[in-house]
Image 1 (cartoon, rainbow, N blue to C red):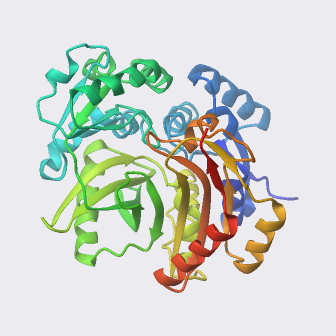
Image 2 (image 1 turned 30 degrees about the vertical axis):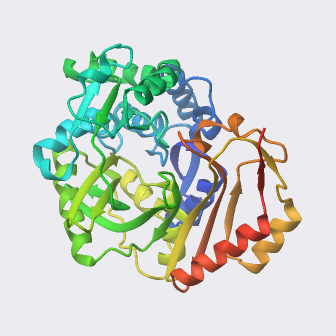
Length: 429
């Protein structure tokens, strides 16, 4: 008799990540099922958290039970995981520990207790307060951000009061999209009134800069493990990412210091039985490290590049933790010494033109067999109509392209060749 497979429910199950999961040797014992499908949590008009939970319960009952719950996506993926894990008595982080990561002001509040020298100054404010700008206790330039967001949605760098007021028009129109469902969860599952009842849905913080990177790690049996650091590289003069490159070019001493900071702050928020990634800046001139934000999940954007270097994606970490198993160390058993996830962007709105068809994509894949490409646009797509996960406050993602190389020069040569061959244009409206 065949052994019954374990039901692994995924919040945001999509084809790209399903392929990564099925490549894992643990997958032979697993059936991957959607607690929520990708199109139920991305590109949606609103996040109906109670409905998402009800649908997940129906799917779990229909499947005959659940053995693990995972997600590699930001809100609502990260917060649905601990709610479902608690209900079905599964391994996973506590709801409060996830909220201490996800609520960016609450997170800064916790970080200040253990790493006060490694964070910027910050101040929450009510975006509907006409005097909000005057109440921010430091001078511009500074960043303003929602207490909950992803892909830098509604995040702006402010240089003066006029720019702040202009940004507030956009913020006031769109702030409820993510904050309303997020605070529904805060109100229902969180104890501290300081954070559940606050009107300050935005916060300001002083700029931090330097070499940006993301540290990935996990917590198992109270042991906090760091397994990789990925460089997050922006185009010159821009704030949007051009690529995620692995492994990091930072000096080992700096990487060790980042790992120490990560262990302090993960211990402070109380995250357990979970993967995490933490975004950092390293200011080489001052020799200082600054923490940008904590995410209680793997970064699915890094999955393919881990696979290219290690022969194993970071989905291995996520799945084993959910099954209450210690993940195996990642060895350098991949095909490439370096790898990157590139984001081909447009920094102005318009209509997509000259979008390549299957024939051109197939020719490129033949030339670069390791290439993974996801094109976000079709011929004539109005970039302003792209779903939220392809847009930040300053740019539009036309394509995601993953490549591997012998070294960085080889990697960038491949990418530049791919971009020339794709030849996607944006026509101004």
